Amino acid sequence: MKSIERYILEGAKFVVFVMCGLPGSGKSTWAKEKHPDLPIVSRDLIRAKLGFTKDADEKAVLTAGQEKQVTTEEYWQIAKYAKKRQSFIVDDTNTIPKYRKDLIHTLRTYGAKVIGVNVDTPTEICINRRRGQIPADAIERIARKMLPLRKEDVDELIEIKGY
Image (tube, rainbow, N blue to C red):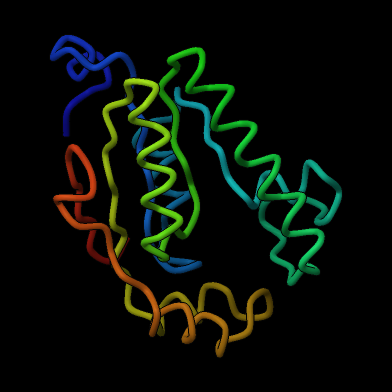
């Protein structure tokens, strides 16, 4: 895997890693282990910041209004880093192509090199990791609808199996 500095030397103004994977697949773990120096925009962190959960590890089903507040804060954080041309990680499931496409388009308008990271972990493992936090049927529903990032969606694609 290339370091951030190498991407910058190759002409990128800044780098954004866009994670894609089921809840419990290891996205956050990968982000923290591989790029501990980069800020992370995470809906879990935002839920805790807004007081909807006690911390980022607590998972909760929120109301539509609460999730809208989370989305507003998420987009604000993304824009804040992008405007400064600061490299960062978008740690979200990013399983719905329409929203992903809008995110990637926005990042590119700021000059970001967008690196997609598909974290492919078996659904049963994800369910076991989130047992008591996220209902199994919710993870199964996401898995049925999920479409991983494709090479043509991003500037570079990293595939992680069973993190």
